Each structure stands twice: as structure tokens, then as C-alpha cells.
Image 1: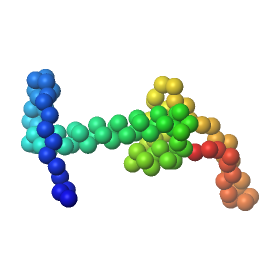
Image 2 (image 1 turned 180 degrees about the vertical axis):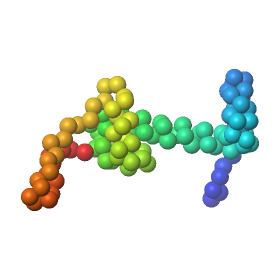
Image 3 (image 1 turned 45 degrees about the horizontal axis):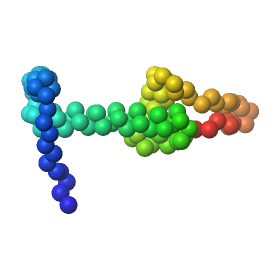
Length: 107
């Protein structure tokens, strides 16, 4: 199986002008620019998708982060910014005498 596949699409003139501008600024060719932008868009979509699943209670926060391919902290930061998505509260406490964390949080 090929590592890369050709994908073609029609774009509005405005998007083509924007691509040309980015190519000039980044000093890259069209293929590289489109690959880079598409990769970022897919990563953003995955983060949004998995954080929404977390918000709906279908995934844990750790699972959402793993499936989105980002750190737990990045997922938490993003979840805080989305409307109607709240992080599940944690009642984690530090016990200095035993040097262990205790928590009943669901992540």
C-alpha cells in the first residue's frame, strides 16, 4: 500500500488566494502548504470531537486526550474554553505523612 495518496478537490477562488498568500509567507509549495493546513485542521477536529464526547460523558478525560493525540493538560485547557463543557470535579488530596495522592475523581 502506498504511503501517500493523491486527493483532488475544487476550491473557491478566495481559498486559493489565501493559499497563495500562505505559500508566499511560508516560502513553501502548494502541496506542502495544503498538507500542513489539513494536518492542523484534522488535529483540531479530533480535539473538538473527543472533548465533546467527554462532555457528553461518553469518554474519560484521559481517553479523550489519548484518542485526540494530545496531552491531558492540553485537553483540559481546551475543554475549559468550550461552552457547555465542564471538567468533572476532583476531590484529590495530598497526604504528606503517607506521601500518596488520594482521589475519587473520574477521568
